[in-house]
Length: 300
Image (cartoon, rainbow, N blue to C red; front, side, top):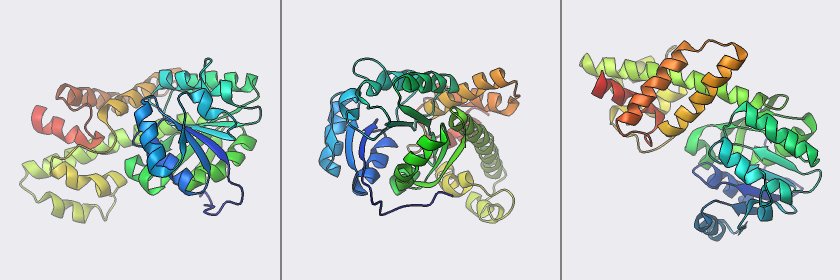
């Protein structure tokens, strides 16, 4: 378990790239903790709004945001987004000094992590892959789970920064191990959400009170984070929150592709990925991942 350091003696100069539903609150926690934070977002207006709200600064390019920073944190969309904020004349690497640390909180492929770790190393910059779990609520409450890969020294230097918005932050292994662990996370979630969807759907069809059912079964072996945090909205057909189906399909695609590389068998993950494809066809690409129950209700 990460040891939180709410009163760090050393306040760092930081850059944060990407101010979505996760990145915005995370950067806010860093500014509130007393760090000197400069943000960048592809939509400049969002960066301006963040700076006005939190009192930090914003920059027009990743390179400008990263200039002089001790640590650069990123939480963007996918492999190509991450490359775009790291590489090129306006990329963060071009603005970072030797010995600084880039921390990637995006969920991306292990391949792009390997690529960017090598590119950073050539510039004598450290690169830590540090994907996150805990959803929007975890980001807003500073209670994220962070799984990391990279050099031990770089991880230990970045740990006090990540502690600001995490409840647990662990180095799993060398570069890429964080992303591989995030794949385990998404694989586990896929099966759990499908199982929960089927249980609630069955309860509805059987004429049972879904809330009463969950009150009982959640206290036994069936209990899970998904059950505790999503059953009510699932019963109420409310999915305009949380982690979007489109992003989950991106993540599961990474899992399935990597499974081929490591000779792992993921039959349930492959099936649930197709179920999410059905949800997209229902117009639910931006719905929360718990919307798998809608597929059962509408498609059977």
